[in-house]
Length: 225
Image (cartoon, rainbow, N blue to C red; front, side, top):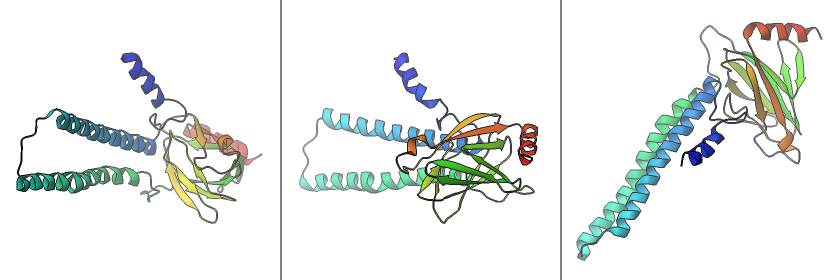
């Protein structure tokens, strides 16, 4: 049994696992996933319990009036009360998590802006304040929020670095903004999450998070290239 559990838990790790978060936005995504997983497990257990009860119970004979009354209770309870309560709980849990990933104004702080444009099938990375342009690699400072302004030059792509934040669509003619933050230095793997043609699977983004002083040194070096 323990081997089976370890086999399934292995899917919670890795460079593209949203369940192995390395930033505040990714932690919110992981908590939302685990919350929904736990809720769905409870619903599954309740359904199985009712199913077993229905199979093993010995029903008592009922007249038409009590039978209709019992039927109405199940319809109201299972068809109205249960969905309304379930959706309310999930929204109450999920909406605050979604707000944590939005690029909301920060008091006394202006996040670093990085422009990312999706092409078939590569990433164009621009640092507008530093005049740096890169291909298929993104460099970030750790411990501070970064606003990624995304768009596309051709078809719809989707920017996704699972261990740092959720995904966001890259739409031609429109700019969307995703806020992400890395807790500590390291290498992360990004991937286009929207099928965009024959080269979609190879549209990979290398993300490197640097300590603040190392990122400043990296900026200084590349500004003079």
